[in-house]
Image (cartoon, rainbow, N blue to C red; front, side, top):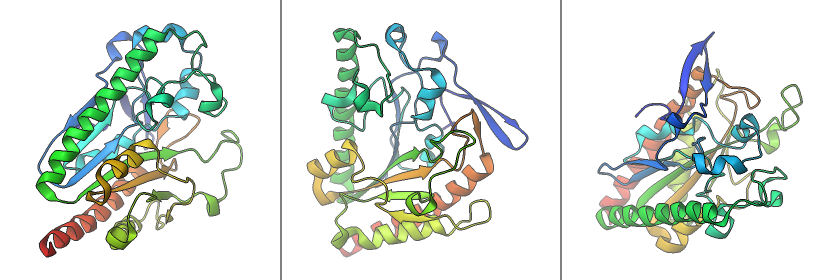
Length: 290
């Protein structure tokens, strides 16, 4: 799989300049999935940036401000999964990490004070987006159930990123004490069953230096939950699905520009691969004991 299915990337002085085209030719399918044998699903459901053309007359946020609230390049980690899922459209066309009632909203209170859509966004456009939301969850149910039937226990790694320089490009970053380099969301995880898996995964993430330093990896620091997707998985499938949300602080890119640090991304991916290798060993051992 390509690093990004919708973006053009060029190297410039060791960094990548990421171009997000808005032409009709750039419009993609709502999501891409790759299905292979194995118990690990890796998802990047906020990685997309394109928005279907019929919605654009009602879009009020500028492109760069919208990009800042999306999770670009989180698809960089996907190829290591067995089943991999990438959302190609912007989270603002339909947010797959929110319940249907909040998946499309014209209320700025639902979007951190940002006005994304005109208040007169047509109802038929909203319904089109909600239909895509329903189709996604039906697809996930079909795939997750097949994986559980085959493996008994599965691991879902849902990859996101977060901003830590909201005071502006030249402003102070958020304090490190409140902003780990990788925040693992494990609010739905049964620690009695999966606590050791979580720790092995975290140790793998820490084992590969990023810019010469071991990354700060902690659990459940910034959010009370991982969003609707992990909550839905837990409610629907219980302990058969171990779900971990990875929130990568945007130390691998410029939040206020179009540049990504490819070397930092590669370091982070090496840690992700090490953590996943540990998790796969745990899953294999657990299945052998079952």
